[in-house]
Image (cartoon, rainbow, N blue to C red; front, side, top):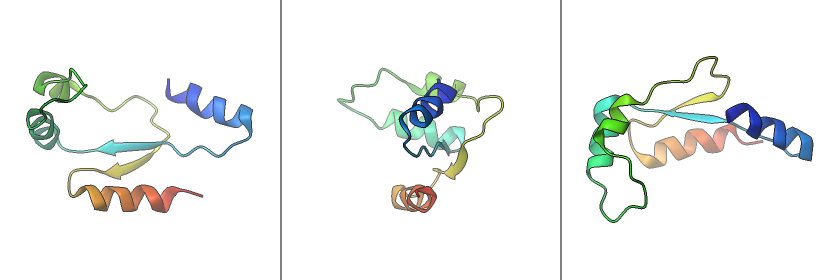
Length: 79
């Protein structure tokens, strides 16, 4: 799916920036556990089982801290 997004953007002649949000398992589990009324059906088990894809060619963003810090990292990646 990741490659398809980049290929679609290239075919349309628009820039594409892939950002992989990386956070420790404990942070992911806590965030998922704190959700209520969320449309996602992900739970702590889903968060715990998330793995980095093989051959990741996207920019890695530290999402283990404040949302604003991750947003600033992503903004810095944009053309």
